[in-house]
Length: 77
Image (tube, rainbow, N blue to C red; front, side, top):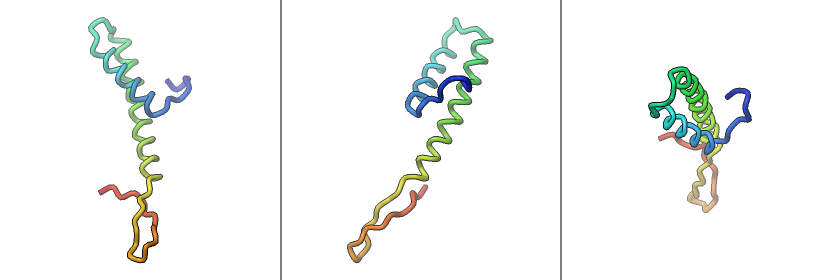
């Protein structure tokens, strides 16, 4: 996968679903299964990084008592 164009988040999730289907298929060879598994791990790690980056960009707007809105960093709780 590292030689291919990086996938966006949605395309990565689609590819992970495809990998799961292929791994579940009886006709997938052991060698192909190992390769697919490795690709899936790489994609899953990229998705986690992408979600983490997105989370840090999310801001919450809150209206203060004086009527002014302020931006707060995303709270994990």
